[in-house]
Image 1: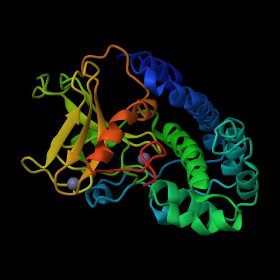
Image 2: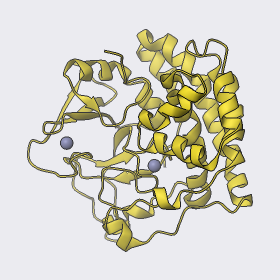
Image 3: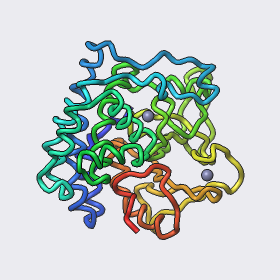
Image 4: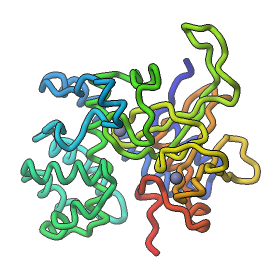
Length: 312
Ligand SMILES: [Zn+2]
Ligand SMILES: [Zn+2]
């Protein structure tokens, strides 16, 4: 099993081959590192507090119901403000916060159950309108609150998933999960990756060539297998529906897949020849040069992130 790099190592690798992204990637490296640190810290805390993912129910999976839905979201309570204050120091260093995170410090300190749900849903549904009122009442620009939400909420979801499942992907067994959104939290993926065709442990034959496609959730960190030629949004696979583009020379296997029906796109990285695996969240950020091309082609990101949402 190849080793996996940390977010900072992944970003350093990308800066070496793509120096034009240096300033932005170096600015975000400490945030990604802090997320990782906070996530690891929270794994045992989740256990202490008795928080875990619901048990997989294959018949619900067949219906496309993720493990966490609006009805059974865990109540993180003070853990959410705890993570927010842990992340505040690094968020403050970003130009858009201009040294101040007072607005969201106050917001996360006084969270009602209702507000907590709004913050979580804004993140998993990737919908800033859910926190519009909260931003207004706390006198914060909506993009800043949404950015904070997207940096803070994933820490809790990743810790919860790791505490319950480590990095296992039980949904890949018997193709239990066939959706383009996350089997754990329901979010659309931020990136897809291809791995080596592997020897099937039970049947000891090689799966067909070309590698298998997996989708990666940037919120809870889950990975799941998906139809190689299918669109995660339309959730169907038909001939010529999925197209791709990449830079002319593409030695790192970085490309964008897009759907000719719904015009959504997402970055894809081919990891078949890599001896060390990148951190996928950092990898997605490091492919923002392709987001710019996608934008020119009038494609829409499958999941909006701070680096692929440009003001018009
Ligand atoms: Zn997820
Ligand atoms: Zn589509």
